[in-house]
Image 1 (cartoon, one colour):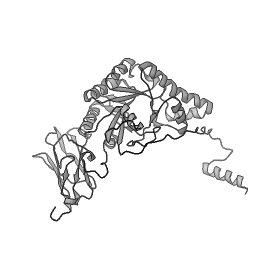
Image 2 (image 1 turned 90 degrees about the vertical axis):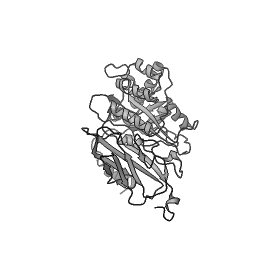
Image 3 (image 1 turned 180 degrees about the horizontal axis):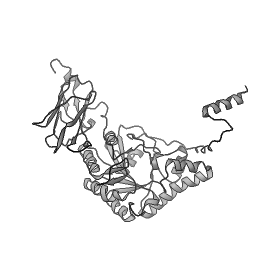
Image 4 (image 1 turned 45 degrees about the vertical axis):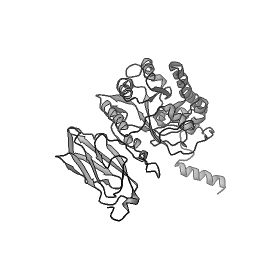
Amino acid sequence: MPLRALLLSLLILASGSSPAQDSPAPLPPPREAAAPELLKDDGTRVAILGYHEFSATLAPSEMRIRTATFRKQMEAIKNLALPVIPLSDFIAWKRGDKEIPHRAVVITLDDGWKSVYTEAYPILKEFKYPFTIYLYKNYVDGGGRALTSDMIREMKKNGCTIGSHSVSHPFPGTVKHHARKGPKAYDAFLRREFGESKAFLEARFKQSVNTYAYPGGYFTEDMFPLAEEFGYEFLFTVLPGKIRRNYDNRKLPRYIIHGNSDLHFELATTFKAIGGSAAVPGAIVQTTPHPVQPQPGSLIESRLPTITADLSGVNNLDPATIVMRISGFGKVLSQFNPDTSLLSWTVNRRLRHRMCEVNVHWRLKGKTKHEIPMRWSFLIEREAAYQPGAE
């Protein structure tokens, strides 16, 4: 078989179709986009949290979180001693112009729901947390459940900045639909979504806009040169992960916090220890709302410690729902004393790593959802632990 015919046959087999079959027009090839020069990893990690809608009464969902849960999460960030930094500090760090805490959080809120102003904003203002709202043009002043320009202006006076979230918030299927119309139509569509949104926001709110949150998290590499043309320097996805200084600014991770699950929040606010350092900043948590032993960030000599949490300050605690997890052990058979409300477990296999992380969570009586977990870590002085009689 001639080489050209052989290659055509292989392509047909790989696609599972034949030339005679109808198939959708291929997407236009991505335009050339030069990869940006990136700085070296400096060991700092940043978690970007992404929220959507809030409600004090409506049932939680992936995109809607209860106001009370949001408050508990903001309290947890405070108890975790995690600094919440403004997006401007994140940008300066990413450019190499500024140093930030080694473990930091940035709060973002997408779309422009009115509940951002009525539910989340008072809490963020109370905690003095800076935040960024990603707005799409067609929803600003959209009536009903949408933010108004006046609400946005007021929030901008109290720690809020804005970023672009397109014109019409097209979901992936819509973007692909326009791509199949051909390169010229697709280019016009992207220019409208990227360009008109930026121009509108800058004119309406008198702020430079150089960050973009992909609607639905969907992006393709042919968007990169167009985003650069319009002056977008930092673009965010919905792929979870901590950001390092050497990450590509055109596809930065974000943890989208779901209202019906704490998983992404727990992942976002759990940081590994700084390598090789016995300093307290390596600990996962520096404070806890209830007394614990070993204390957060402490350095102990025993590799077989007893780990305790005094839960006497928890009102309406359901003891049957208490769960303790220890790094390297998973869920352990901890003991709860109903007279003292002391939860305890003695390590039964010598701790091997320099840092031990503890996670304790519970439910209140009559509730079906666990409270925000209490987490902390402590360090083991391994040299002392290996000395004769140390155990």
